[in-house]
Length: 122
Image (cartoon, rainbow, N blue to C red; front, side, top):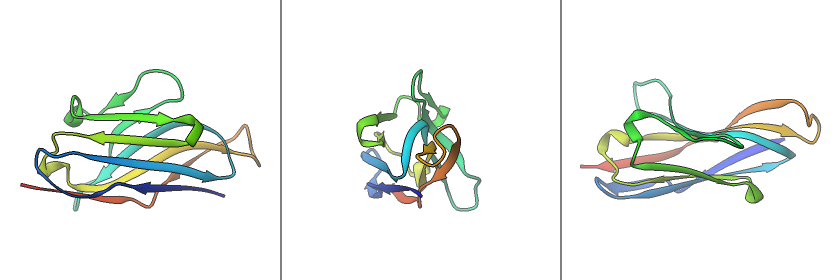
């Protein structure tokens, strides 16, 4: 079993900052890409940022220059630093990761966190 647990969401005023964290635990053998998605009410879930195990990060155009994704491989954790937040950034943010387990070291599955609410007031 693998779990992704997010933390760090909350209520912030426009222009403020928040830092989201997502830690993978359980039978983790290796983690490939890790990323953040978000879903606002009435909208589809969209990619915010992704960081592969090696290589360049990728961001949605709407967050470039304001959000920074990073990861700590020793802690199996991915972070999302969000600066200059706007009301349109309000959404439930979900952590996502491609993980192989000790039971299937060569087989990767996609895992999701439970989501954390980010609300930006104007």
